[in-house]
Image 1 (cartoon, rainbow, N blue to C red):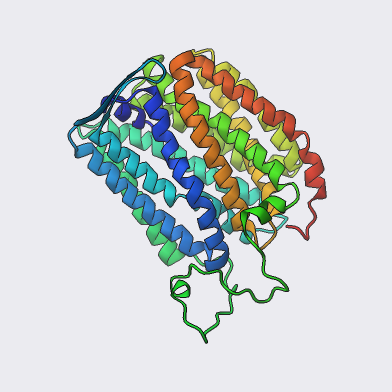
Image 2 (image 1 turned 90 degrees about the vertical axis):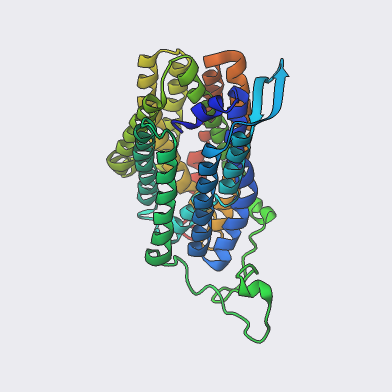
Length: 410
């Protein structure tokens, strides 16, 4: 995050290209995530997590190659609608790296399904809070580390190498330290040999179940309340994507920040979220329902993005406090409700389809956010506030949905 916008600017891109580059990852994730989610239901979470992390490491290697390529011009665009930019060879490799990472990037949905496998009704919300907190911890260390390492004479090379190394460590941990969360789901038919079975791509035979669960798109959408929850998932990601496309450009062009300052901001934001998603969420989850925390968090997010539109650095850091509080309360609580709707055997499918709806929203939001910022500047943050206001209004139905989710469904 801290240096990608500077690379796009250096390699000839503009706000629109930055938004498009950001959308490449969710575009490919849109197709990859549901497939990986279904595979994880049938072949196990661990194998799919391993595949995803290998894809991430290879993507970082492509990213590293891009840094050493000459900035050879491939296409020059001078447009009244999307602005002036140049497509160069390094930009093409950045696009390829993001595409590969996105195609194998279903690790979030599969990790959520893994977590749901090992959670009970009593610790589900707390576990999702811990998952969100661990992600926030990564977002504290990652941007700060990227900003510091990127400030050396080697530029972006050191942070990219560090990212590849982190992916290698993750591969090691999954391969040697992570047990399968849902073993014994299959009773293989050894009488027939099929090449698909050899590579674990075929739907495995169910056992210890009265009826095999269908994990198709139509079945996921037929689960009660899931379509409504996916609408909220979509709109939330749409609003957040406006922000993530606009803010780095806003920091570069309006605030005059460098990669280190941008990294510090994201680290500050994530540090606040750790406090919210850790001790604060654990305390509040014992006092309030998931639905009430979703509603409260949405309200804070609306105010946060309204403040960001002010364009003042002091207001932005004030808004960051509301961002952390709102997102830290809302998102783990929302995921807790969603996880109860999929049942024991469809967690991967539900999470995969949800991830795809988020990816679709990210594709639209990142491209639109980059374009909108080029046209309207910081007014783009008000579009984000509008999206979250719609989510807030829809969230008033969640107490009813939560009351209808029985222990048998979870």
